[in-house]
Length: 349
Image 1 (cartoon, one colour):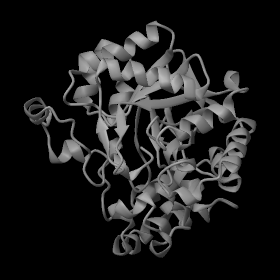
Image 2: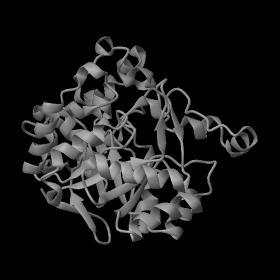
Image 3: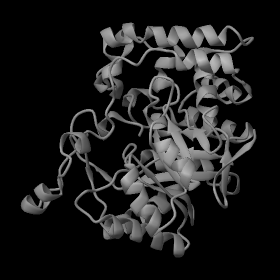
């Protein structure tokens, strides 16, 4: 598999592996650490060298799994983890961008990942209660100390990206990007191109919807997708037209599947865009990786661009959407507020 340059001095495989679903987000009964370890090792065999996790996935168990699996393969892998969220007993998260928390979180992640250096350390969410200069400055110190190679961020606005990029260079921005979630193409992806910053695309196969193998009836209460508006029964029926479009394009390429077309669409968004599909199964891993060989034609891309907008929109940052300025609330009350339903609790981002 070819490599993609994310930023100066930092290149990774064209596809990465999202590891969250191995430990988190789809119900504890779905965990199989032995199978997940085989998936991680097989990824390396297939040329995948970017593995994305976070301390809140589990919490902590996903980093521990990845640390065990890659303990003797560290020279082959780029480990990307995240900080800045703290899991609560009720399943919600609070944001914590204080320098002292980030430093403690980094030390703990290093232990769980069984490594001396985290290749890509990402701020999971901006904490409005802490000045960006303090949060990002603390992360920059971790790079200068050699504990972290490069920094990334998830779900920041373009204005925030401008601020933090001026403090210490950003290597990657992570957002959802897929045929049924193309919103990042409007502003975030152009920002990355202008600034020479890589883009990590999570959920490129629509949290499984774009495989055509997920039905509303099979979702159970422990599955985080039940809180995603796109997975409501009526929405899934309406969104079937998007899946039909993927299948139509797949039929033009011998043996291709809808999910491979979905991944190929993300790859076609330009250099520096790396899809990180997640899976717990060897079969789907190999299918996903094979998508790197699929070349969509201009006609294919035109057809996919003509698909209707998705019914239902997942808000991965509902705290920001519902409360555009919570800093005053937190300063007045001293409370670090939880994310609302449909925000970080939904899993995998």
